[in-house]
Amino acid sequence: MKSDDIWKRDEVESPCINVCVVHPEARICTGCYRSLDEIAGWSRMSAEARRAVMDELPDRASLLRKRRGGRAARLKR
Image (cartoon, rainbow, N blue to C red; front, side):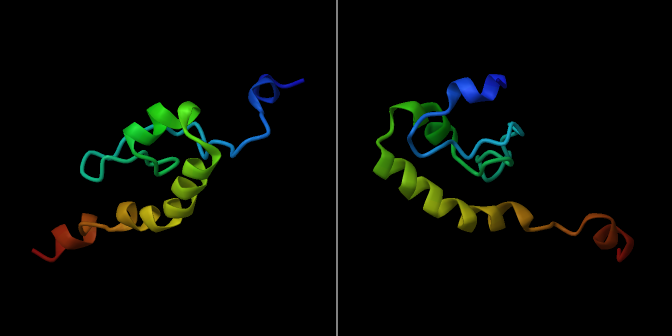
């Protein structure tokens, strides 16, 4: 039995992928795309509230994919 099996329940599972880094501008986790409030309150949320958050996550991913130019932008100067 894996240790992760202990925490499985018959509920909407957490989208956490154990990459817990908060984006400094978007203020969401770069791994699961949840806000800090959503992460902190996840265990107390109803299944409906969790589903609502899960439905929003794909749209949030695009907030972190916007690039500021990187190396290519610096070379154009």
